[in-house]
Length: 314
Image (cartoon, rainbow, N blue to C red; front, side):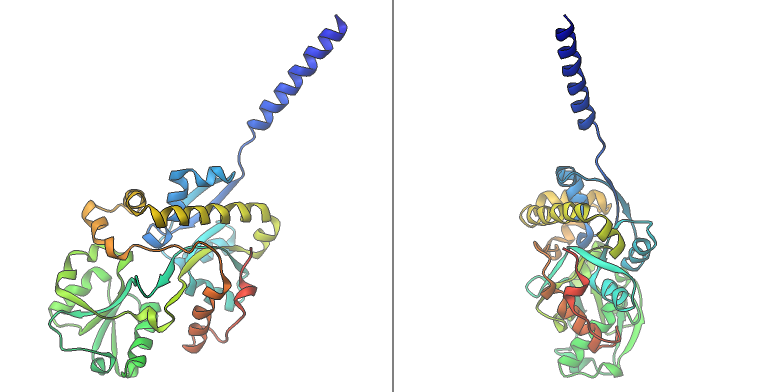
């Protein structure tokens, strides 16, 4: 009887221990992103269960811009954050201890989303035609102005003669129609409210082509100290994002429904994004970061270039 009772108690203890192990909560990770197509992978991963499959309990915090996310990550308010590569490259060059741990949006010249656009009946054919003109952008000295300036210079123009006017993207078409500006530069895929006025405009050029025909446009970052202290969590998060990228690239209709909820789009807004949907990088390749670093150094966004391998944790 004693042996039977001992065996029963041992079995009960083993079962309880197993159940206790199963009940252990998944490690929590705080992630910030911008609820736009470029930053939507985390919403897809949450909806499709890729984070949980990777053994992560991810809490998402929507934010308004990449610079604010970099600051939140650097301060420890977030563990991981989505940001555009220019914000990351600038922060890294300034000595902020951040590192890139997973890719996000991939820029391809075959599916551009930043456009230098003009009225359909405007006489402009190339960059030279814009000399001395007024061009709208969504941020003075921001990336939409800098890349548009580079494109103009590469296509026979002189961007130093341009007058730049800052305004929100949804107001640009009206400003063109009223002839308050001659051209406008904006990342159309990030603001579907521009959808309807596209009927009165045409693309003169695609400013991101001034950087390269293919490069990593955005990614997920953390601090070097958090990456060092949590290599397993970094690996799990990166693998979940890569799996999400493969899923999203082949399921745009399904991902569009998730994006519509996350970004609070109307069906019409989602439809306007159809030709501007983001392709996602399916690996973290340092060579795809190099064009952004080189461009940033050339146009004095950063003081000097650095090795892309040094900025990546894998």
